[in-house]
Length: 375
View 1 (cartoon, rainbow, N blue to C red):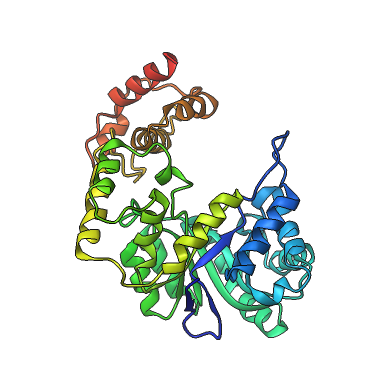
View 2 (tube, rainbow, N blue to C red; view 1 turned 30 degrees about the horizontal axis):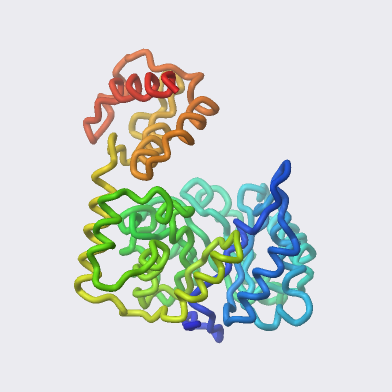
């Protein structure tokens, strides 16, 4: 296992982190955590050098924090850096912040966590919750010894990311990044900006929820196969990230013992600046091969919203393009019927007048609905 240090802290962690959002589950109603297997996975990973464990208030319906507390008993807590997150959507007034933290510490059976993150920050939450005194709350919790360092996890655009970075003296920023997201959400340039301010970067969704290892298009398979060194799809995806010296640790939601063992093997060689010029070119070509499968090309700017008839155009297009890229249309059809079938486009054209990408929105909505109806 390779390790890296969080800037401006005394914490050094494994470059592989255990993300506890996708723990092993039982094949029964509600898919509860398979407690013995989850504990076995977490402890085996720690025994083999993993030293960063990440959970959150809402993972596994609130049971992830409880399970992590159980897994870290018996001396395992002393071997790891423990992170959990403040559920911003449950903060209605300033006093809620410490109440939630106290509840989480009780679940975890701990008197403190090493990192406490504002969870799933976006512009709306930045504008609504942060003014309640989030920075002051983090400072107060440090003084009380309930947290050691503060950070945030993020899902929005690059402009919002920079605003959040500049808001407070953070020690950690957790962002979505993978082969396909260099120019999405926080962006790689945003990561570089945060790192320049001494913020340690933690990566989530390195495999896009596993999509980069499932239903891999033939064009992408051929690009990987042409390389002189043969690696698994997961290995290639992780390698793209751990090459970056700004990235401290990469979270993986390891839901099987086999996934965990493969990741431990991969991260035995997780050195920064490891990519050859040929490998850097490979990733550019892999991204282009995936992007060539995009059909609509909606950027999600939402200038077309609100639709007079309530059609959630960006959501539909984004999900359809995702299905196109990863050949996962069956899942998309079901999702469409559950979430978007009720609101029907009446072809008024207001959306197309507002679309900066000049997408034929009405035609695409008709095409997609017909495709769904045929299934």
